[in-house]
Image (cartoon, rainbow, N blue to C red; front, side):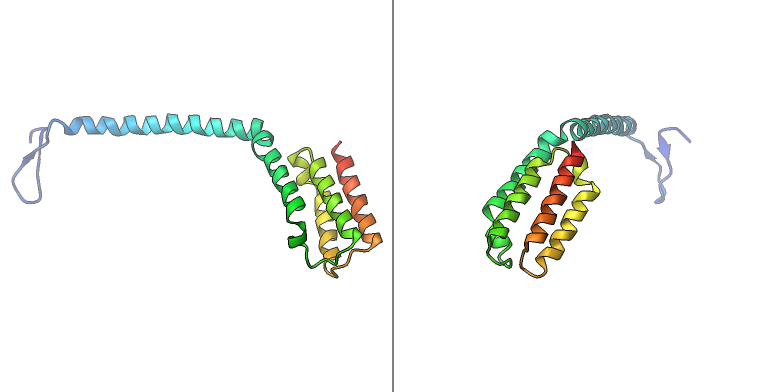
Length: 147
């Protein structure tokens, strides 16, 4: 049997067209191009995440949270009774968000303590002086631990 011939199930022998050989090599070439481009894109992505994360994501995120606290506070926390303490809590949370300097602080245990205490404070829809003082102490401790 000739190299260019192969049996077909229907019976007669068919010749392999000469162009068929070049397609085998194109597949390897496309695969190599894909691997090279994928490696470059992956390396660029990792570089951006490691070196520019705070600049690209963290700072805009902080600004977004501060604007939400400032502009949508009354709507988001309308279940809390209106008082001076509610405004003080708004100021404390703005102070905390603006004082956060790194993403490591967000993964800290202190933020869990703050959110847990805030949840328990919001249950009765009234903020007492003791609760506000405790929240203030937790925020100060969290910001102090970052330095």
